[in-house]
Image (cartoon, rainbow, N blue to C red):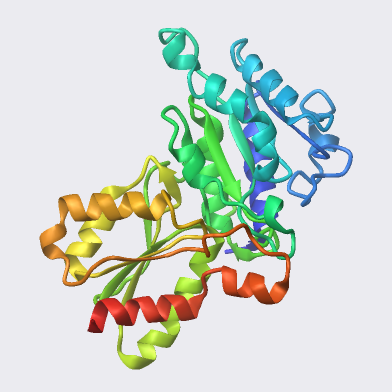
Length: 325
């Protein structure tokens, strides 16, 4: 199987779907002439032209509204945010229009749109450019939220998102665009709302998603040297969440650690904790451990940033705590 970069997988997904359906178009800052801020739309302007790959002004509220409105005339737009931190400028359009069109129109209109771009931290980008928004958008009925962790999942899930008749938030990472992974040549999709057991294990379940899941794999590689077997579940889709896969894993391992790059209060890990404790509490042999960033804005200093972010050592400590406490 061939190996491609994450950015190439994203570009392939968009291009393949645009070749099949002329109602699909891409718009956002620098997506056309510059080939995308992270080169995730490289070559698409040349293939599809300026009417379907559209450079926008620096006006997230404006172009989000234009794209949402276009869905009501039969289009299926893809909106790229240079970072989801900038989506805050257009969040009224996402929350109050895209997410509510179907209900408020009494089912007369769908809103088949994908909002995609990077989330969470990406090195020294400071507090206003280093925020994770998965739980923000997942809190909103009407939105689906996807956060892939590798090129294979990114391509398959993005194709499904583009074909979906509801608004989808598709979150990437600036630090993953260069990641390489195996992606087949042929057509494939991955269903929205299905988690993936990336590593089978018997002693503890680790649930994570997005780029931070790499720290779970590092921890599992170290823990296996001590004969500790970790089962790693990649959520892939935050909403709708695959509760069944998580619950079945906890029934097997009897212990749960959740790793998420987000602030500690009211996050995805909190929702998982509630679901597990309310449905399979009797299977737990230890309290659930959740690992998040520090409860502060992201620092700029690389020394402080390293302390702020969760890492594999945090995962190892949490696993040992649920095993031995």
